[in-house]
Image 1 (cartoon, rainbow, N blue to C red):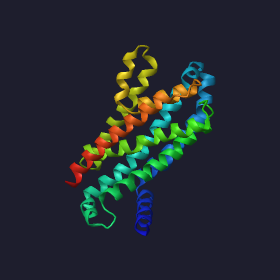
Image 2: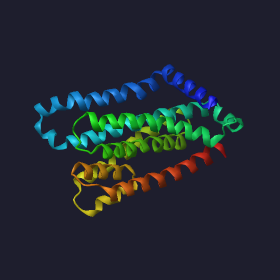
Image 3: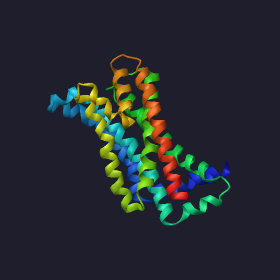
Image 4: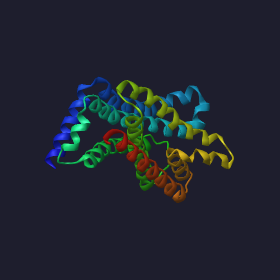
Length: 237
């Protein structure tokens, strides 16, 4: 436990030391929250057409928050890979899996807090408290997926930023499901956040959203398992 607490302390020092990490972990989420809570109502007064898409705007803004947090954790892993610190983790008493799950847990927890604030404080989504918590959890699961994808497919921090841009574009694709009327839109379900969107849309419409929730959990679990194994094989094998 003391070793993990020391790691937490070192990680937050790294975030505060690196200007980009500090910005993406704290400033960017705060700006997204302000954009939804303060600026969106102003824009709606000048551009009434936006009102019809305010729920979708909320979903996309929240998605950007959690993905940016996942990027921060990935950037830390890439920095340690550049310095060959990840290789030394094999000899640490806590073990490789414990270290990785700790890192992913930190990002997931932060993403959950910000996602819950976005979904509840904005007043846009009409969700039962339990649905808001479940929706925030689903959003939070996006953070470790972004972390693993970025840390797996990028060889260094420079490549990491390019990979993050690709990840951000891929994560935006499920939004197209709101404009596709046929069942063909479910093809987008290979991207887990699609089912997060569907669950929250169902909940906002007054439904329990149980099928969407189950599919969201399954999709996140399958993609996480695949990315985790791929990351371990590429980095620690």
